Structure formats: C-alpha cells, structure tokens
Length: 81
Image (tube, rainbow, N blue to C red; front, side):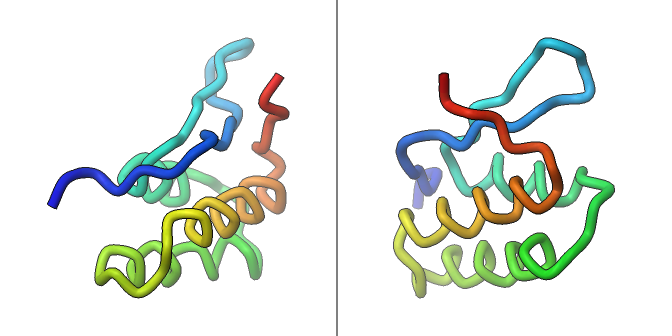
C-alpha cells in the first residue's frame, strides 16, 4: 500500500519562522502530531484516528478533518492562503 493521501493539505507552522508545512498524507500528519508540544483532546484523539486509517477504517477526509482540528487546538494551524 502506498502513502495515504488527503486533499487539500493542512498547513501548519514549523519551528523555522516564516516556513509552513503543507501536510497532505498520513505519514506527515503522524510525524507532526508526535512533534507538537501541546496536548489536548483533539491532539490526543488524532493518534487513534490515524491508526484506524492505517487499518482502513476511516476515509481520507475524516483523517484530514481530525488532523486539522488537532492543529487548531495545538495553535499550529495556518490558513491555506
């Protein structure tokens, strides 16, 4: 199985000022979730949702929505523009 992609990407802040990361696949979302210092209900829920997707139990748009909610909660979400 290849990478599990979703669209449109979810843009998040990076540790480098002025640089943003457009996350559009499961692996990138999982890496971002593990790197965030902020923890909370949406961030905590993101991990299980990503694991279910690996097993084929969620569709890509559900994974994207969960990842975006976690990014907003962690205060790293950036507008697509």
